[in-house]
Image (cartoon, rainbow, N blue to C red; front, side):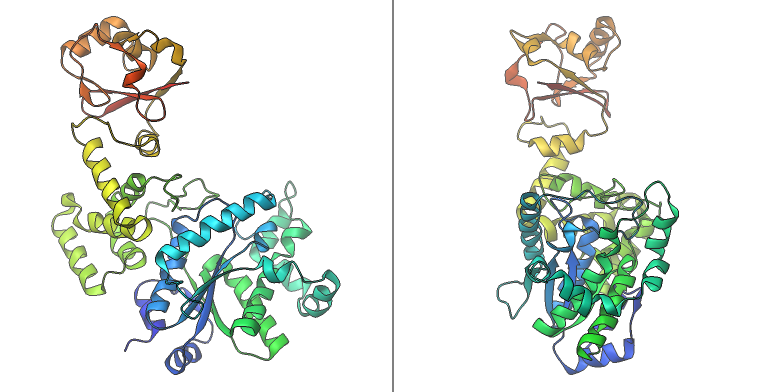
Length: 426
């Protein structure tokens, strides 16, 4: 049977690990409780977090026990790692709503049917009751300020005179380190996993657990995931692909994976699907033989969408793709899908009153930028190159009314094969 450490390494989840030989032996000798944490700083997890959830799922499938830590406590502070400014502090109601969403998203992929199988915990439950004086005396004394300042994420912020770093964020690594020590004591947790930007926080927790409990625990990190074209997917970088359907529709989620560059597809199949490595190699070979068919990307998009959104979400994504890239009318598509599909299209905001009693199609085309004048709009219609909500428009005297609106009070004009224009009515 493959050792879990070797399994994770083969799929690209290992950039660095503490004491790999001892961790491998631990996996061979017992059922290991491990944890991965995500702070509720947004209302949804994103694809970057999905890497961590997939790593947890692989370890769980290998017989080990995951603890998903939703950072209700640390989320009130904010991790300064790889950030140029301080995170905005969230109010308790927002954090509670975010925590509920994160727990639900993790539960779609992990088996959390019983505490013995796996559990989601909120670190606010042990951080909030901790008295400040006790924390400084029992935990703070084990941290060297010299070493904390030397950390890259802290040093960079100290060098930025405009932003600097607050004591609040500076203390974050103490809190995350304490999480590991607490989970070892309360749950027998022996391993923390995370992205490579968490290496300093993880090793601080390993050291603190040794000092407080005399225990040997381990850390494992994966490389921060970037596309070969240099695009990251992080919420701070504005490239987030969210796991929540109301923030990134299943259609947009599917399309993001479908459009992965050829250079990334095998790596992403290993990270974001449960497909066997042999099948991934076969898909890679098929893609190399016929790049235009995008065979591997299609399988990647299908599997990743199924994992995050289930069969209903995948079905909705495939139906939306067929409609949006075909000639069927857009009826039946939801507002989120429409917004995601046409996010880059030129748009115009118009008062809803213009639809009463009706707005001429020529005036609509001019208003949303599809034509420079009524004359040009009339000519485009006569040439058969205009569609309204993907239905052919052949009458230049046609009038658009409120009954023609798509969800979100949208109208979509298509000129030719690929030129789309949006009109938003409010």
